[in-house]
Amino acid sequence: MTVIDTGNQRSFMELALEEAEKSGARGEVPVGAVLVLGDRVLACNGNRTLELNDPTAHAEILVIRTACAELGSQRLPDCDLYVTLEPCQMCAGAISFARIRRLYYGAGDEKGGAVDHGTRFFSQPTCHHAPDVYSGIAETRAADILKDFFQSKR
Amino acid sequence: MTVIDTGNQRSFMELALEEAEKSGARGEVPVGAVLVLGDRVLACNGNRTLELNDPTAHAEILVIRTACAELGSQRLPDCDLYVTLEPCQMCAGAISFARIRRLYYGAGDEKGGAVDHGTRFFSQPTCHHAPDVYSGIAETRAADILKDFFQSKR
Image (tube, rainbow over all chains, first blue to last red; front, side, top):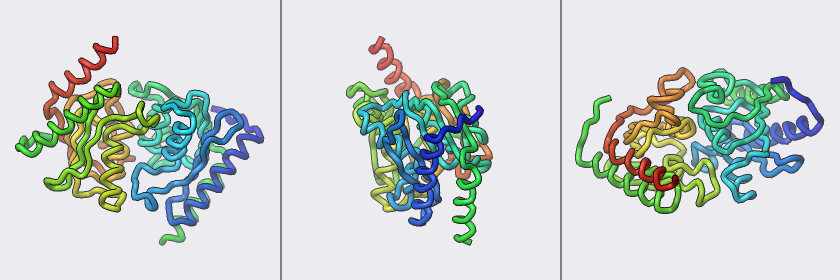
């Protein structure tokens, strides 16, 4: 879909990028996410799989869990998710279960994405709720954070 | 794959079925899971999405998180997962990330499964680790628990 690039959207993605950078500084794969209800940030976090010894602790899962706890609901139908990288198989499933309204993501992920690559979950018959998807916001910076991280690891 | 039906496997699935029943008694969709290392049960749990206000709190995710915390690792390469229902999109992703060795599941899930239905994640190029999959163990009982639950809800 076409990106409606408002100032708010840029600043939410900016926050997600900061979370990605903090993630990388902790030695985690640098991905960040922000969960928003209207103009209110309900949760922001980065990937913490190593720190928490939890393979499910992707940025998206962490912000969904925090926002659901905050709202006392397992569904977030009026909420929008900003994430620096295209969500994976697991996170695409969680986004659907949480009934998230809009998904804004930065860089595409050919190897592990499940929105516009891989299983393209949101267009499958076994997907029972699909968010509106807006891709490519701050794409270059989101991709550069990941590229720099993996280059520094070599 | 062919099911190698040993006594242990039956008793681990039995435990998963008990978790499914307890789940249903709590008003949750009745699915249960058990995570095993050798002959040792590391975690058993049922679906708790309503109770925890957490759309990611499927039985599989809960036992993976508990077992990872127990072992202090985000990977469970020598562990086997028993679950009463074919894992969904999200859980298939988590199973792959956790590097689980073998997946034993009960009933197939045409509407929401992602192993032998739907996105069939484990045979996709974006899946970087696939467990050995054994399906149909205690299938009828697993399916009946779900059927009874949904009939009682009508």
